[in-house]
Image 1 (cartoon, rainbow, N blue to C red):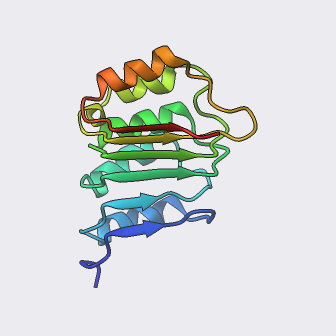
Image 2 (tube, rainbow, N blue to C red):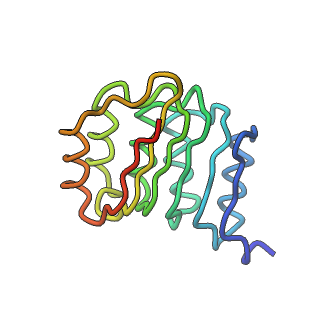
Length: 147
């Protein structure tokens, strides 16, 4: 039964990290994953996720108060993502570290779309860092900072 599921969304939900990793291991066709908003265990979780399902192409962080730039960098470094989405994540993008993390990752070569938003404060990357992303991600077609 697990061979037909290609997308899994826990948006606005809460799921234990071990249960989420079991889903990633159990669904061999899984390519799209929307993460729950609860804490999943930091960088080690994203490394384990990549080991469990290295074929993930779309990863979305949604409405998280605990997701940090280092979590996004770890996911990008461990996977070859085509689309990275971070919606309403308060702890990301306070400095260009998120850009450095993306550009230093294996996903930089495969990313076609990046969408990032924050709550309340907006995202303050500046044009120079968006330009770095465009130059450093040769397949990037869409960048959206929708505050």
